Structure formats: structure tokens, C-alpha cells
Length: 241
Length: 241
DNA sequence: AAGTGGTCTAGACCACGTA
DNA sequence: ACGTGGTCTAGACCACTTC
Image (cartoon, rainbow over all chains, first blue to last red; front, side, top):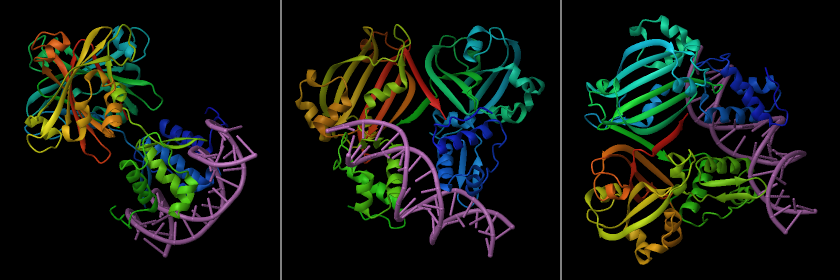
């Protein structure tokens, strides 16, 4: 364990120690962490200082607090929080998560753009999955998913049908990899095969390209995802403050 | 002034009182609010309670705190914070705000989609402006801006050349309207005139449509903006947590 | 009834900005 | 030197959950 910077305020050092315990899975998602009083005694600080440390962790989404029950390590779920922003035009304007089908899963030497995005040495082994997502029976999203093979070996061993419709819980359960943060970049492209077929569009039709890079607790890239969305059903909604 | 709910915690009631003073412009953007000690005495609460109230306001972006200087009412600027997410492909990958030219400004009876978005009675008078934005001399954005005429009369009285390149400071200075929050929705459309010409594209080319509804401190709609971005230069980048 | 986090108080000292 | 917000302490009582 790296020594903590003594110049930092107590509550930040305590915060970092707790975050490290979560990052190393010493305290696992879903579990309760020690109570405020226990932490105060263990670290020899006032309970108010513990509260401030935990509060910053709660703001960053690492833990969740429940009055009367305790403080719990949060289980992030970007498979659904992607859909916090992304919307599809269903029969009504509802906020549904489309069903998903994995079409293929391969192991290969990584193309340059993939290894660069995942910050891997050139030609590292990677896993590629193609996935189709449907709403009301219509294809709305074609996903191309890239993973570092070194971290996700168990994915190759599973039957494709065993891989759940939510990928991030699968990563956590079978590979011990937890997604903590992600970045998305949106742009427009002319769709090419195989994505045109997956979306039932003519080649060269315009689609929204949503590139997502997902990171673990230590900031290491875990997954690179390129999703193509059909223009007619695509919406992305966000609040600015 | 509505009476405060006595069931709420002290710090939330204090928070609401301060927020109301900001909303009514009793304390104006850029000004310092009273010190923690003064607020504690004035409201007869402990200084820690004042700190908690102010902290929540700072998290919501209503005020900014500076150690040694004081706490100041924040001046939101969505003209530049739009560009927090929106990126254009310049000569390099830099994060530049494009120059802007106002092409027209009219007063008219509001079309139905506009009055609905701005939550105005049908056929209310509205102001429409068209604006072109250029990066490295190339048009990258065509903006269609709608305002309730009742709130923005001074805009009609100004010469178009007097209207600055940043609209929100102009709204504040000449119309007393401050934008506090906004929502954006992204989608793809086939561009029509006059936006095709403004962007130097062929009609029916695909563009990104960015619809933005901006709200004041009391949550009232202030501006509806529909921006079309050329597909070749458009990028939208966001972090998910 | 016991234990948890939530609110609130009343101080102390520190770090920073301004004059 | 002075005033500001930032950190930290040591308690009290309350609201909620669990047993």
C-alpha cells in the first residue's frame, strides 16, 4: 500500500483509504462498510470527519447510505445508465432498455485503433463481440464490443447463450472487473457492413456512432464499445447545469 | 414569500431562503453573499448549519466559494458550457468556441411547436433569430433561437450588430433574464432550407439536430434553440459516472 | 431495545486573500 | 493584521431499520 500524503486533510486521507479497500475488492459491491463510529475509533478521528469522508464517496457514487441500515458499496450499472441518456422512439415515448442478442464472439490480435483506445501494446490479444439490440422487434442498435483478453479470459470460456443481457454484471461476476466510469463520444457516420445489415439499413445510410470507453476503479480501460444507432429512432437527452 | 415548511431540516430551510434571494435577484450574480458568521447570527443557527446549507448551494452551482474571499452568486454561462460537450473538428483537436454571426431577427406569432416548447399560450408573440457559427472560416453550426417576446422586448430594440457573440450575458444585461439550467436532446435529421445553405450543405444531407431548452431560476422556459451541426465536423463528448 | 445514519451545536485552529 | 472559508473535534438528540 502506498503511503498517504500527510499534507492532505484527514477526511481526504480516510476517503482514499476507504476507496482503496473498495478498489481492491476488500470491501465488495453490495456489502456494508463499517459504521461511522467503528471507522472513527479505528482511524482515531472524530465521527464528523468520518462523515465528511463517506459523504464525498457517496457523491462520487462509490457508496450508498441508508439511514438506520448502514453504508453500502455501490454496484455501478452502466448497462442501464447508458440508457439514462440514450432514448429510442418506441410505440410511446417511454424509457425502455432494448432486448439484446449476441451475434458473435471472437478472439483476435487487436487492430491498431482498438489497442490504442484500450491503451494496450500493439497487436495484443483482444475479444470482439457483436451485439444487436431490438425494441418492439425492430433493430435500433448495433454494438461492437472490444475487451482486453488478458482481463476477460472467462468470457471466452462461456457459451454465448450464457452471457447475460447485461454485460457489466457478467464482467464483474466472471472476470472480477468492475466498471466505475465511462466516457461517450457521439458523431455521425455512413454505416458499413456488417452494421448496416444488423440495423436493416441500406449501406451508406447515416447513423449515430456512440463510442464508449469504460474504465475500472483505478482508471484502467476495460472495454471499448462502438454502437451504431439508426437515425430514425435515436435520441440522446441530457441536462446541463 | 411563502412560509417555509417547518418539518424540513434547518439547513434546508436556510438553503431555500438563500436560493430565493438569488432567484429574485436580491443577491445578484457576481456579488458576495453575507459571510457564514453573519448568516449564522442572522438566522440564529450554528455556523456548521450555515456551512451545510451553502455547501448544497455550491453543489447545485448557485454559488461559488473562495477561501479567504467569500461566497459569490454564480454567473452561469451556458454559451460556453454548451461547448463543454460539443466539439468541432478544427485544424487540431482543440476545444474552440466558433465565431458567430446573427443572420436575422424577427418578431412573429409563435408556431405551435415553439409555443409548446416554451410553455406559452398558443400564438403568443415570440422572437426568432438565426445565427451561423464558423470555425476556421467553415460553417459548423446553424442555430435557430426562439424567445418569448414578453420577456425579451429589449432584444428587438437593439441593433443586430449590438447583440454580442455570447447571448446569455446579453439576456442578463438587457433583459434581466438569467439562464440557470438547460436540457439538450440530440437526434439526426435531413437538413432543409435555410439551414442547408447556412451550413453549405446539399438539402437532405444528414445533420445532427441539437434541441436545447433553457430555464430560469424558477424553472420557467426562457429560450428554445434548435442547432444543426454538419456531420463531418460534429462531436459530442460526455463523461458518465 | 439496540444500532444505524441524519441533524445540529459550539467551539478550536488552519490556510488563504486582501490590504 | 484581519477577515474569509476550510478542517476538525466532541458531544447531543432525532429518525429510521432491525430484531
